[in-house]
Image (cartoon, rainbow, N blue to C red; front, top):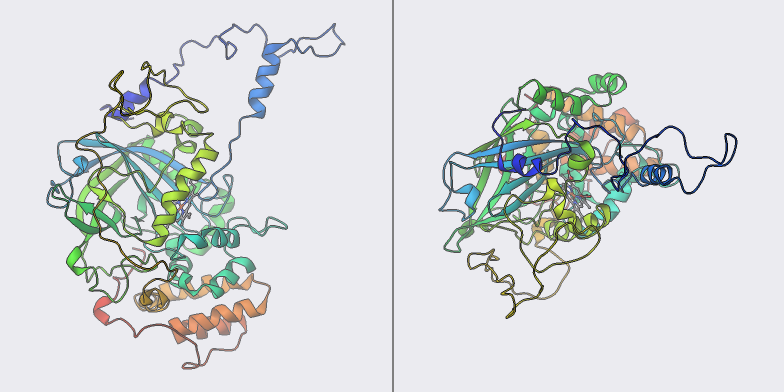
Length: 530
Ligand code: HEM
């Protein structure tokens, strides 16, 4: 553990239970004389209800489990610190992005998406990369993944998508694998997923280590400066060690030998002082350039090619401390896309808008009511003051006799003059469910991804399709997927069709609603595992 204690660590000290006094008590503090033998009526008689220690011990055990996260259930966390390279006052008023002398404490949780809490680490899956910055203006979360795009464009499809990805409902098979009919049925019926599927079938979906994995905020967000001027931003985490993956043969062996492969690697690296480091980079788009692209910045199935908007490194995060208790910290941490600080705002990305509702809603259930922000790992390091009150698990003892505003009795909690202001975006339109036409282009960037791959990477992608689709029982689903692959690239479709013993789609006969291919200058940089 690093010697320099940050603001979050000092705050957590108040909640730590020292190890020195081990005398056992009940939850009410009464000393316990025997925790091995229940109280009985005679040596051969029944156990007595009045044994309050026995009842408390069993009851507490019965209530140990809370619901696991509905997605991203399997995770590993670490504390860290974020250091800014240069003040960004021209772009944002966020305090932690303006003062290079401040070391902002962070907590990161890496996760797989589909598997349950007890599943293996090294499955083919997306990885979560969620970061909480404990800033002087409150908590700011980047709740990202290790891929820069997502499966769907609108959050209203998320329950359908997750139900298709999770094990099938009748037999809970397969656990944490995309090799099944419901998943591929969703893919063939929702071609907006295809760009993400290309990433998922690549080696990026089997990272070698959380220390060697990129992170992406995925959506376009907005930075807002003190003058109220907005700039679009995409968040990127770049691991200082570089990006590395396992290959499939390694995965098969590693999973059997050590299902905790990734979390053990993270824990042990931090214990031995090999602190993982990630540069935070941004892609910035001035508002005047919002419509300069042949895709919509609000479409989370599209990247902004780095050739068009290069990455600018703005700071570095170092993970330097393991949690002390997995449940208290890693399991109870609650990230939320709507945890914002002044100077950062959303856009109207329809996937993001749904997330802004979903995370708080699920955490109210998962963490037992509205007071979960008081759990130590979730508490901001600055003081929390407002008129919210009561609810399950209230830990604060508010001294005020009033809890409303405005308030002439105690003064109450007046709103801050420099408080969070939502970006003043002009919005008008007819209520409709459609998005801009470029949301219908499901293939161009999937093609760019395929074209950017080296020969061996293409081979791994083809092999992944063959493995995953090889487990699909229904032939029409396989044929449907292969038809879509034909719209991505005939070479890809041909190799997959041949391997599966299916008819090769005839070029030109493949239905595609793709817009004309993007120019070569739009090509994403090779995402080859390095
Ligand atoms: C959890 C990322 C889309 C709902 C998570 C976590 C990550 C993540 C990293 C794990 C957080 C943790 O470690 O505790 C993403 C990304 C998305 C996306 C990058 C798309 C770009 C969505 C959508 C919804 C959603 C569209 C719903 C409409 C949830 C829920 C959880 C979750 C309910 C569990 C949260 C909890 O129990 O604390 N997501 N997600 N996600 N996500 Fe998403």
